[in-house]
Image 1 (cartoon, one colour):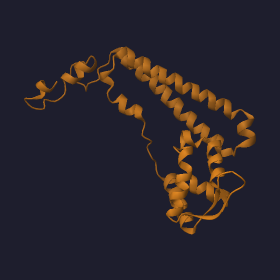
Image 2: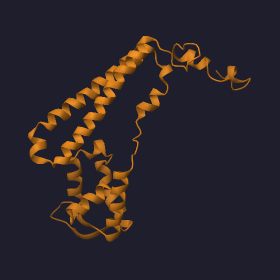
Image 3: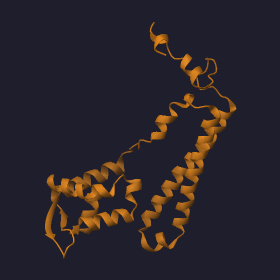
Length: 206
């Protein structure tokens, strides 16, 4: 969607200019659009009939540059993707949630320290976004809705910072990781001992 949208907005446009624009948006950090994949994506979208190459030129010893435009099929695909992302909530996979599901494998002290470290890192990001919002870089060079995106990212980070601090305090308090009614688990061993019995060979597999 990002590449189709930029070509639609800037057309006719070279792949180099699409890449430069995406990098100026820092899209590699928040949209998972890697600079090295842009030319491949342009070729693939062309093969699928969503873009068309309207010219290829070479100046001196520079690499040849292809100019692209969006096809009617590409216009339809962009509109479909755009509205699908506006009207639906898409959960972004975060590797941290996979690690957090194994909380009992971490010593309590380390788990609490790691959460506070995560809060510190998130806080640094929030400070950078706040400084950016107050800078001429945002006010003078970016559309207003870019600042609104920064506000969204800051709000999400601030919510997670509060969550990290709250969970760190609960972990340090010694609260059980097990459901109510079961004995308190102290780390991995206590948690693992409470797993359901899975047959006579379970002890031998440990």
